[in-house]
Image (cartoon, rainbow, N blue to C red):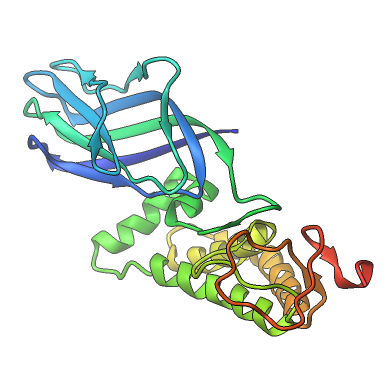
Length: 255
């Protein structure tokens, strides 16, 4: 699967200025980087990446006087970014440019699947909504709103884990993780709340209501012990009476 993710350096650039892409719960291989300036530089703008603080060798350049999007291929076979690694963009030559948008194109290897427990991130949400929708959300923060996504992620993860704990059919994986088999459930709930924050996108929350209602019904089945997920590789909390099966198999099918 391919994905496109972006970030922005607002205002005039400075050397050493950094911005982080949100970590995600899957591996990525970055193949292209596109640079676009709101105000073209008098000299060239250069950018590099850091992975968990380690500077990567390749330099991405936007030539002097260029403001339109300019795409640069990453050195073969691409820049590999493992699950959970912080990908940071750093300005190494500012060029007197302003308002730089950095877009990455990557192939992905999802690790949040049936046989894993994983930690959902804000990056996962960003991949599930359109760029204009996410920009509408960030605009509310820039105008004085609170960034409610971290709390929304934490609350939704805890809600799913509490349901699993109460259902007593699974041990729990590391704190902050959910079964890969519950990833769709997590996303349906989070997206509905996300669009409640984005009032400028008309009708978006209504379009996600049916999926959210279905997710809440499924959450109730987990709470009642009618769903069972695969055992986590690392158990942080053992649940008495837990019974394992293949991901998502109804309890009636495994007893």
